[in-house]
Length: 311
Image (tube, rainbow, N blue to C red; front, side, top):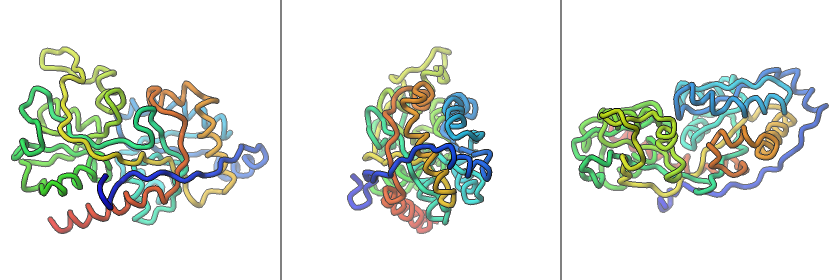
């Protein structure tokens, strides 16, 4: 663990309420449409394909139109909830912590639970297996790929990890490239734009890299499909708490209760839609609250201070 800044905390339980027809109609009049935004971990077409059945299920359960929105970046989700335009958001832990720090009135209520890694995941540094690099120290003067300043596994934890190793990225690497998404970071590595790329990882079978391999998105120079064997992890972080699903704090209590009920009923009432979100790799949603991310808030403050110090 990251000593006193360790990242994994267990969530506390939140009561789940059922959906009542009369109560639903009360808030339906004020919210005939709900906007549900997700963090940009893959391309827009991939997000729509993955989430469309679940959003359809939510529309049916809540008896209002639920519209999926793919945020351009993590900041767009934060600003969308700050403006009140996004009622439900799916955050990474760092972007959620950032939202709290800038005063967004949003509440965590659920999180993914992996069949393999539970309520957490990891930040990893990938290199190509064909490269000579075996450790971070081997990459002096080479190019580093990071995801987004509000990405936990693709930016915040990598910078924290490098700092703990006594490495200043601006001085150690030849260039640092902000790729914008987890998929883009892997693509930059395969294309040679960067020599090492930070990313999220649960297991050999559950990662953004594996999703890209399954979809046939990554090719070798001879045009053949790449496999896990074409990549090497040279560093893996301690476990990070999974990001939350949130709703705006100012929504009617009955509406929030109904949203919670719909989410927690999904694994049994809409099994196929629920499984598509994670390619069948997740257990039912776990309950969580804002306090579970206190250590992530501390991490964000630390990295912010580190960046100001080096600016």
